[in-house]
Image (cartoon, rainbow, N blue to C red):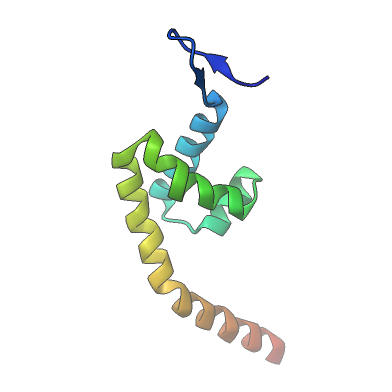
Length: 96
């Protein structure tokens, strides 16, 4: 149940998963957001978004995967900076 047969009779992956994978990838490309922000936007888990854009997307659309990978790498390289900014804001708000 949930699988569909193609013309040759072989089972295909669920179509809604492909749609979700593309939606996650396109949102990340449009906004440059993190996996966490994408998960919050689509009300899915971070694990699902991460698996969608790092594993499933490669087999669905290789060109889109390459673009999304660049955004994910940029976010990874900036992670320590965002963490420092968040910590500074936390302590600034605590002083007020």
